[in-house]
Length: 258
Ligand SMILES: [Zn+2]
Image (cartoon, rainbow, N blue to C red; front, side, top):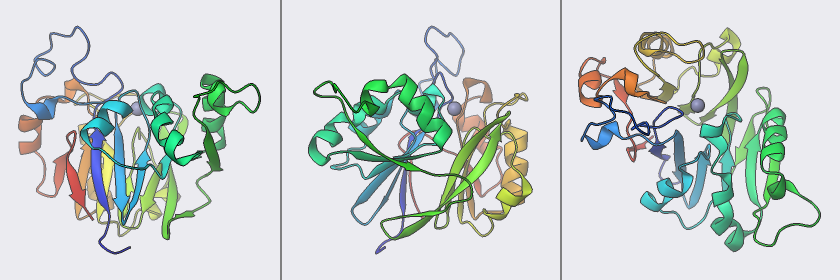
């Protein structure tokens, strides 16, 4: 790797995005562009390589704003629609490159096969349907992407296991409510941590702000960015003012280097 990792936050919103359709909540009506949040995803780039983590319903819009010439793979955290519903829009990359590599837990692949059967079909394929090359990953198997080691980290989204990813000193976790001690060990020494902070009030399957702050302190990364944000967290500008100096709210199209 010549120049380090570049990470672009393609989306930083919770499952409905912000604004929520039809909502009159002040955060949904905010004119601050940082209060407009598409569904969560990041673009991770190094050398000439482009990977995304998750591929939600806003994938196409996100890449119109942050164009890439090629897509080297999609790493999935879990099967929920806000993280997977945009997979059909890998088509332009598939047409130019052929099968697009995906990296996901077997359970997630099973769910994707059910929902997007035409993408995975072996016979009678619809001309124009995209195809993927499946790479199964789990919490016990680190793997390599173009010379960089990637370590999957299992977190719990209520009772659903979700995979986060560590790529060198960058860690991306989303939809976390709990992390087992053995998985926390994998985060030691990371420089940048991304983790979800849904809202102020507690939630059954996501860290709220207080839990996310405690987790950020436990991990002690040089910089921590919160994502998967609901309108119920409040206005970006007001929330960010109250955070410790090395903790930030991510916002859509924010670019960082590691
Ligand atoms: Zn989610």
